[in-house]
Each structure stands twice: as structure tokens, then as C-alpha cells.
Image 1 (tube, rainbow, N blue to C red):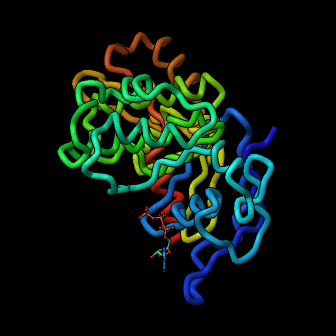
Image 2: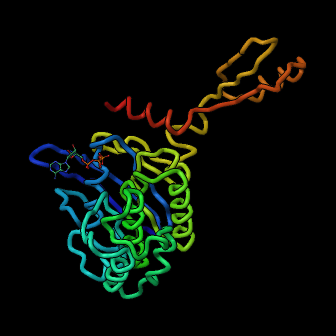
Image 3: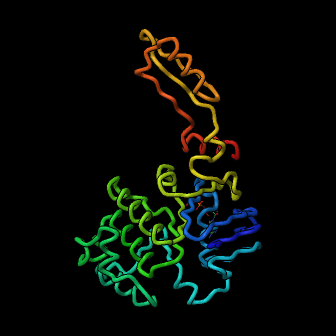
Length: 278
Ligand SMILES: Nc1ncnc2c1ncn2[C@@H]1O[C@H](COP(=O)(O)OP(=O)(O)OP(=O)(O)O)[C@@H](O)[C@H]1O
């Protein structure tokens, strides 16, 4: 079953096309990450899928409806975590989450949501007194309080400290295990690698690569670099498959205590892809 289906999506601002014929398919229950440099068109695409922005052309189905015309029942099945919303600063965390819960037919209990995002100690604090990272966690709470079938997360962990980011990853895994489909945009490649089943790289309004984090851009089958130190001298060889070389080194009784085998990281692959589409 498909949660998101996009064919030939296009969008221009004042004659300048920033989304240039995107095809995308996200299955139900999948965590899908959209990567790409600033201005690549990620937010524009996401906002079209959320029904917050009009497209110029293309077919878009989100939870079996066209987001351009879908109504309130459809909207209640979707959760959105926007970049830096900044309203209702005088309400407390608990008041805000409880208030929003009232708009959904089957919300999570507000205290549970606050706990899930790690804000219980700040439950009675006014929103304007929260730190940037705490504010972001509240945004996440507001996105999940309605038990969405599909959750949009636009750069959700910007401003999180490393511990908060790990907690957030656990939360995403919990939601995914419950069957929530998640579309995530992020600039943190380790985040995409940790969370996404599949990902796509967007550059200048086009998808330039799509795949699993392990296989993106032929990463899984890319050559390996084998390095080891022999008599204090560092040796390094690029090989398509490290097995024969390591066998040879073992047969020659080489000291392999410093052996490393590395392949391109997701970041290496991403930067190569982006560099090729500038
Ligand atoms: N309302 C708007 N009016 C005019 N141009 C816009 C508008 N919104 C976005 N753009 C332009 O469209 C392009 C794509 O922007 P978008 O916000 O979709 O990129 P992004 O990939 O989400 O970037 P970032 O990583 O910085 O969030 C950019 O060049 C941006 O300046």
C-alpha cells in the first residue's frame, strides 16, 4: 500500500521553477528521508504533499487523496512538524498540547505525548520560556498528538543536543514500529542513516538519487580501501573486493592488528551526488 505517490510534480515561484518533475513513492509504514542542500526544493515539495502549497502540475496522492482538495478528515490523519513555528507563547506546554489534542478524533493522552518528547519537567512552563531545543520538542509533540497515520518532519532535530537527538530517534522508531509512515527532511546524514528505510536526494528541484541508506549511489558495491601498517609504514590499497587482498596478507603472515576496511560513507556519497549536479 502506498502512502505517498507523486508523478511529474512541478512548482515555480515567479517563473523560476524550483521543483522540476519529481516522481516519488513512499509505502505505508515506511520512514523516508528527503535530503538535499539549502534551496533544493525539499520544503516546497513537503508543503505541497501537506496541502499547504499549490502545485503547478503533476499528480499527487497522499493517503489516497489529493492534498490540494482534501478536507478536514484527511487533515486529521496527518501530523506536521514545521520548521520553527512560534505561536501561543503565553500558554504552558501542557495547555498547548491539550488544546491541540481537542482537534483530533482519537488523540494520544496529552501527558503521554509530553512524556514521549521528554518535556514532562517543563509541562507547566510557558512556551516562551523554553530553550530552542525544548521548543522544537514541543513542535514534535504537536505533530504526533493526533496519532497521525503519516507524519511530516521538516528538519525536526535542528537545535537538539546529542542526547535529545538520540531520544528523538528512539521516538521515531517507536512511531514507525506502531505503523506510522514518516517523511523526514534533514541535513544530518547520520540521522537519515539511523532512521530511514529509504531516502532520496534532491538537488535543484530534481531527484538525483534514491535508495536505501546502505545502497545509495552504488555505495554498497563501491570499492573498498584496505589499510594496514607494516613495520611502521602505512599501506593503503583501493580494491573492488577486499577479500583476495586480505587472504594474501594473511598468507604472508602480515601483522593485521591495525587493519581497516572502509567504504564511502553516506556523507561521501551525498557530497559526490550533490557536486555532480551543481
Ligand atoms: N514563497 C516563496 N516565494 C519565492 N521563492 C520561494 C518561496 N519559497 C521558497 N522559495 C525558493 O524556492 C527554492 C526552494 O526552496 P525550499 O524552501 O523548498 O528549499 P529547501 O530544500 O527546503 O531548503 P532548506 O534546506 O534551506 O530548508 C529556494 O530557492 C527558495 O528561495
